[in-house]
Length: 82
Image (cartoon, rainbow, N blue to C red; front, top):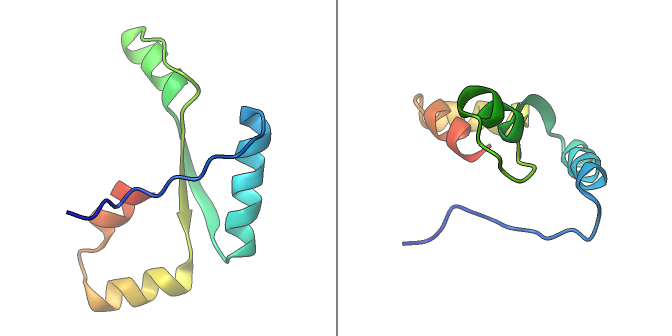
């Protein structure tokens, strides 16, 4: 089975890497529509300590519209991979 995960390692401190990723997304027509700070959330909810972990939800409206036209329930997949 082919993986849906794509990794890219960036030689930058965490906060610089986050800004870098957001800028690259913008350059390719994606807007950041959500951010989930997993480190903070897990600390608050279950007092767990994890490494810095940010889920960035990004959307390119043109691509999203085409995907929805092809599969009306694609939104479930959008959330899983963003």
